[in-house]
Amino acid sequence: MASRAMPAALLHTSLPPKPKPLASARTGKVRHGSVTCKALSDSSPNPTVYRGVYGPWTVDPADVREVILYRSGLVTAATSFVTASSTMFLPEDSWVSEILRQNLDLLYTLGAGGLGLSLLLIHIYVTEIKRTLQALWALGVVSSLATYVYLAQPSGESLVQYVVDNPTAVWFVGPLFAALTGLVFKEGLCYGKLEAGILTFIIPTVLLGHLTGLMDDGVKATLLGFWIALFVIFAGRKFTQPIKDDIGDKSIFMFNSLPEDEKQALVKNLELEKNRN
Image (tube, rainbow, N blue to C red; front, side):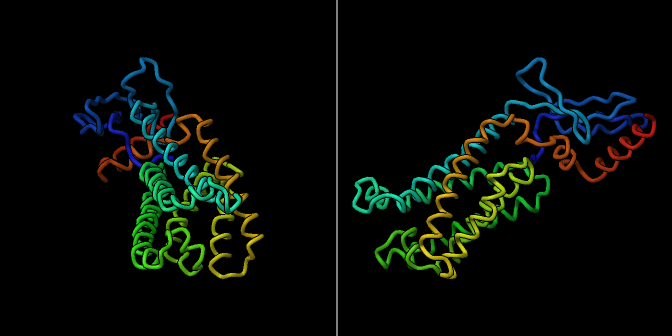
């Protein structure tokens, strides 16, 4: 799915004489008798053309960069989480465990940053959903910082260790993980990824179990192990998908970027085109 219109786009529509072009790109032209919405590639002379709701579109270099950054953010978040969580499964007297415990907050910051990058670039048709996930992330970051400054640091603990030792602190970091849950839910829903679907349930289950104290350490460790494994699979498999999958139907976002009167004109001409066919 895509979250915004790409800048290099052409909107072609058959309109009455002397029409107002519906283009949002650097150049535009009207071709009578047809209605298309096309995103032009700047580099490939023969780009693959995909059929969209509002016309054909192609993948341009800017799209590729955004998708790679989106996936890189997910890998950063997954790597940071897996590394930090591994301390639960390492011997306490291990030098590796000791180094990791000293850098838990750094790993948490890197993971939050990676998640934020992905939420900035995530492609979702419904803008309100994207903004909600971003707002949850921002709330989680602010409340995490406040928890560290006013609660964890005075106690001589890292933020992560403070949350582990004080389950009620889940309320403060929870919005960040709610945003992560929303992201994996979107991935599972859009692409039918089993690991993403399972993560949608495991993430809140672990957090709520810790918050309420109704889950013993053994169960939490087991679920955390599944969380780690599935997160690695989820992030890794993103790079096996075609770039176009993470873009979605680009024509929809190009359409959404138009002024309301131009949207209505384009829809009207699409209907006329459909009736003629």
